[in-house]
Structure formats: C-alpha cells, structure tokens
Length: 180
Image (tube, rainbow, N blue to C red):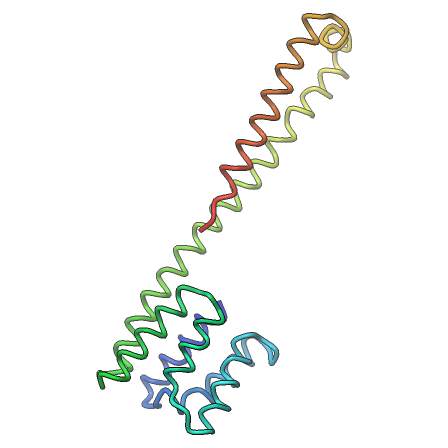
C-alpha cells in the first residue's frame, strides 16, 4: 500500500513537470503525511534521496529496492522505469500507464481479500453452530442426548459425526487459506 501511494505521488509530480530525481524529495514529504516518518517507503525514498545527492543514477536504486523488497510489483515497476529512462520515452505517460496497471492489480487483490474475510467469518460461525445445536438439544431434551452418548449405536453415530465435523473443519480451513 505504501509503495502504491509513493508511486501515485510520483505520477502526479511527473505530470506536474518534475523529473523522477527531483520528485523523490517531494514524495518523502507526502508519504510522511500519509504513513508517518518511520514508514518503510519513507525510509526507502530517503535512501534514494541520499544516493541521488551523491549523483548516483536512480535506475539502479529501483532495482536495489526491488531486490530487497521481493515484491513482484516493485520488480515490474523497476524494469519499466529503467527501460523508459534509457529509451528516452515520455517518462510521465509510461509511468502513469504502469501505475494504472499496478493500481488495478492492487484493487483486485483488495476485493479478493475483502471477500475472503467474509468467508473466513462465515467459516468461524459455521464451526461453532454444531456445538450450540448440541447444547440446545441437551437443554431442551436431555433424554435424546443421553441416548446418543450412552448407547452403543449412539456412540458410533456420534463418533462418525465427530469425524465428519473434524474433516469439514480441516477442509474449510484449507479452502479459506487461499493466497492471493
């Protein structure tokens, strides 16, 4: 999220006429307002700013950050940024296009996470319902529950039900633990 915000700020600064190198200092100020002074991306842009003050090119800095972050989005952005800078293309337009693609991907991931969160909640509720049903039956008709736990056929049926319950719990857990 911090990376996306940093890139969005960079896009707006590039549209306003800043060069990528000159935009870094402004990005730091904006990200400090959004995420605080100790945010990861603020520290990364500060590092870039320090290296820029030593007249180092910005492209290797993006590659270095991409390597350290391990994020596919950062690696893709570093690659696009480097190609655009070397080819002398319209940096602002191409980076805006890349940012739009990244933003679409982030939004899709957020939607998926939101849907998965509701499914996780549903799973938790469904895991607890059988216990409440058993408790309710025990309160409303204790003779029925005693028949399920004192007779041999009742014990066999309840053991099978417990096995199905545990299997359903494990299966639901695996289904919900989808990585995006």
